[in-house]
Amino acid sequence: MIQSAKSLFAMGAAASLVACASLQPATPEEAVAKNALAFTNARIKGDHAAAYGYTNAAYQKAQTLEQYKKAYPGTFAQSAAIHDVKCNEEKCDVGIDLKVKPPLIGKNLGTIDMYSKQTWLLEDGQWRLYLEP
Image 1 (cartoon, rainbow, N blue to C red):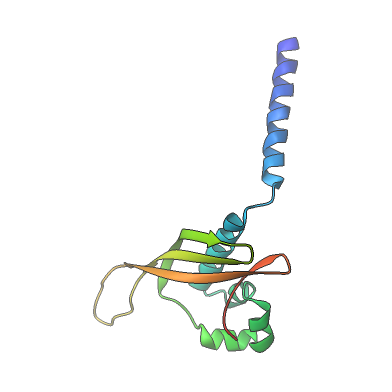
Image 2 (cartoon, one colour):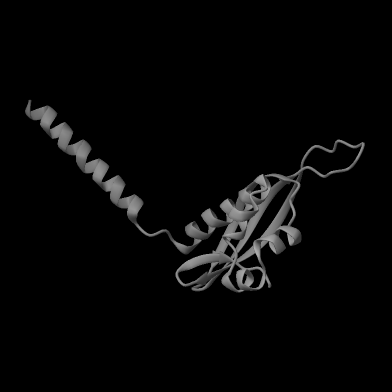
């Protein structure tokens, strides 16, 4: 009985440590990597509203969602992965590896590897993708 009480206590303590660790604020690199991948996946899925939501305030003030859709109509990327993230206090540069299927009529090239760069800025405590208005 004492052994099972100790086991339960140990399991509870371990669960508490895991919960506390998950509540720790993410590093800028972790937060931006998560946002950059979410933004890029939204673009791949064609979810313009979700992708637009990651853009910086100045861009959103100057461009509506409809204007964003026209400027960024779609992508031929099939998948994305974060290559690297380098941050300072207010800016992060993100490299993204993309698998792209080129739309060449009559040709099946499969997917090709491409690389994309994004710049993210810290605005009011939130990391936002910088797009020039």
